[in-house]
Amino acid sequence: MKKKLIIYNVVMTVVMLAVIFGFGIMVTNSNNRDITERKIKEITAVYVTNYTADISFPKDKNVRVTVIDASGKVLKDSDSTAIEGNHLHRDEIKAAAIGRPTIVIRNSETLGKEMMYYAEKVPTGDSYVFIRVAVPTESITAYALKSIVPTIITLLCVWGCSIVASVLFSNVLLKPLTQVKEGLTQIERGSYRKIAPTTGDNDINEILADINDLSEKLQSGITGARSEKQKLDFILSNISDGIAVFDGNLDIVIANTSLKNIFGVSDVVGRPIDVLTDDTAFIKTVRDSATKKSDTIFGFKSSGRYYLCSVRFTDNDLIIAVLTDVTQEKNGEKMRLEFFANASHELKTPLTTIKGFNDMISLQATEKPILDYSARIGKEIDRVGNLLGDMLDLSKLENSQSKPENIADVDITEIADEVKDSLTPAAKVRNVEIAIKGTGTVKAEREHIYELVKNLVENGVRYNNDGGTVEINIESSDGKTKLTVADNGIGIDQKHQSRIFERFYRVDKSRSRATGGTGLGLAIVKHICELYNAELTLKSKFGAGTTVTVVFDKD
Image (cartoon, rainbow, N blue to C red; front, side, top):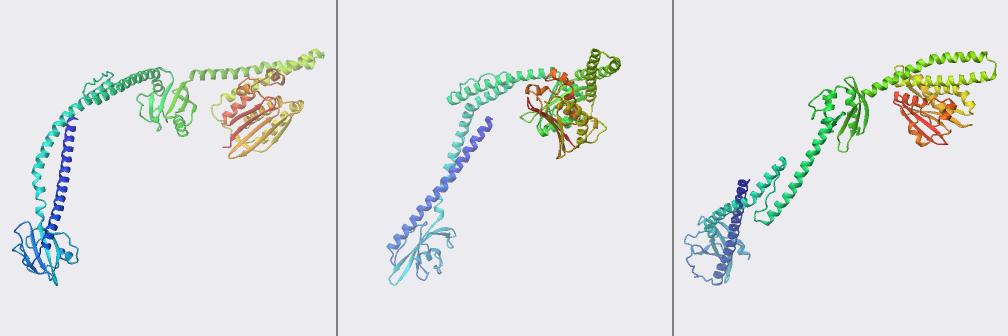
């Protein structure tokens, strides 16, 4: 750095002096030319004023005077080697002939060197002559040439002084800069030491003091960042969830230990997502989330274990994937579902037996109290039977791992008519009217669509007011089929609407029991919608009725 600075200063000094020297020569030459032009005009004016036929010229080798008559013939010349011949074609003579004397520079045929010419016209009675004065141009640059040697000597002296000044200046300036460089290196190592501001220059001392303050803050920031990074690395290394961070190209930026263990990989940072797994569904889901810039949650299975993968898209175009092991919960849920299904199935056998004995009692008994008790037992048996049926249906739906195989085009209007016929007796008891409007089809298992429509319409009838209505509206457009079931019944309060699709959840438990509700109808509807990726929405206002909408993709 020091050597480069010295060389730079010397070179710049030489260049500047060379430019100044060249400019000085140019200015000097121009000034001398102006002086010579004035001199040649003054000499010419003197000869013009004092011209006589026997005029004599002084012997001056740097000034040549020539007298030329009107025909262009040389009458007299101060140089003994005057050229014979006509001179009217000379530029200076042409200019003088029209009354516009002009300085002309050209090579002299007589002397063989560049000359400066100037001529004026002088009247002589009935004719005229031309007085021409010529000066060699080499005399103009003579001064400039003489100044070259002292200028070069001066240039060398200045150059030497610039070297000495550059060395001294570089020592003063570069020493603190070298200290700054060493200090910045120490910051990186975490052992910064202050630079003593003792250069003797107040401006440099102030700069060094500012650098010291900035360096201390920088070292403090680096130390804090390293500490935070160590904490983050510790947390990432010990957290049980697998965490992966991807950039916009889905190259891995961060991968913690748990993630590497999940996929059975080691060195993956800086490599594409494909090195984690060959599961195309996992890669496609993450890639779709990155493309759409939207958050996604999906299930994922690897090495016999189940994971819930949450994909988040950040504001700085990073994609964060968190894999949570839910194997234990998944297995527990599977066991609960199996128990749920088995218990429901096993309870149907003794329930059928009880129902049979109760029917026998009702047929053989004659006393009114016994008949009333038998009727109440039959009603409760029917309610338990309905509950077990709904439990078995829900169990089948929850155990479905993929879309059913027996899918066909199902006419929803036809299903709605069947549901209306089956629920007409219950609707008449409550004085509720069921209306159907529109047509549409959907690809599904017929039994599933029947269960969905039946549960929605049944709820509309069961939780309606006397004289109420249940409207079934079916629409088909833009590759979608929309089913809407609306009633003007009791409605659902806002605080209950978020839980209405949960199993066994009842808004009014006393009314549900009185109307025979099991609390599983809407849970069955929800699982059927999930099975076919249908959009399910509910709008309700307490005291004004409820509207449930299901939108199916036709494909």
